[in-house]
Image (cartoon, rainbow, N blue to C red; front, side, top):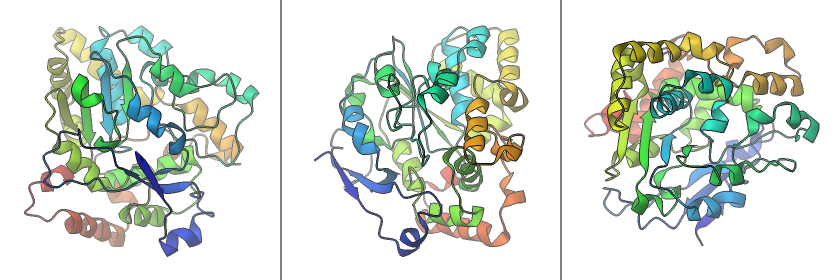
Length: 358
C-alpha cells in the first residue's frame, strides 16, 4: 500500500474540527520512498496532514510521467510560492510580460494537488464565470464536469511548470531518475504562520482564531505539516538539479535572487530587462496583477461565506504584504514565545539546520 490514511486522534482537534471547518483533515503516511535520494540515516518519512481527498489522486501523482524539461517549484505553504512562480515563469519564457498578464498564473503554472475545502460546491454556472481561475488546478476539488484540473496538468505541453507543497516522499517516483529542475523556497516560521492563517480564512473558509491556527500548526495539524521536517528533508536531498531560495533573502536582495534564478536556468538578460522584471515582481505590482492575485476567487469565496464587507480587507487578499517581519504586529508575545520554543524543540540552536528557520 503506497499510502496509509490515519485518523487524527488529538482530543482538541476532534472536539473543534467541525467548528473550524477541518473535518476532512487526515494524516497520510507514504510507504513508497526507497528511491528518494536523501542524506538522513535510517530516514522514515513522518505522516503528513492532508485532505481526505488526497486519496483520489495520490497514486496518480506517485505514478505520473515526469519530463526532463519540467520545472517544479516546491514550498511549504505561504513561503513566497506565487512570487517565485512568477519569477521562474518569466525568466524561462523570455520575459513575456504580456502573456504573464493575459494568462492566469494557475494556467501557466498549475498547482498539482490544490485542496478544495468548501462545505458547498459551487454550481457549474459559477465555475463557468471563473473558469480561467480554476483551469489546470488539481484534482482534490469536487469539480463539475468538464473540469478535471489534474488531467489538464498532466496533459500540458512541454515545458511544464508545476507547483506542489508535497514533501519529498510524496513526489512522483520518476522524479528522482528523470531529474527535472526543482526550485525550493523556505520562509521564517512566524511569517509562515501568520500568512497561512489569513490564507486559510480567506480561501479555505477557516473559522478559528489566529491563536487556534498557530497552535494547530505547532501540533503539526495544518495542511502539509510537519513544517520543520518539510524544510529539513528538502535541505538534505542529494539532488543535482535543485535551487534553494529563502524568502527573506529574496526580500533583502531581489535583483540578486533574480540573477540566481537566471543562472540556474541558463538565461541571460540585459540590466534594463532585469530592472523591468524586478519592477514587475514588486509586491505593490503583484497585488494589482489580476493574473496572480486570485482576486476573483477571493471575492467569490467571501460572497459565498457571507463576508462581502471584507472584499477590500488587505488580510483577505491572496497576495497580502509580503513582509519579512509583519508577524511582529500580529502575534502576541505569548505566541511568539511559543513558536520560538516549538522551533527550538524541533531544531536545537546548535543544530546544522538552525539557519533554515531564522
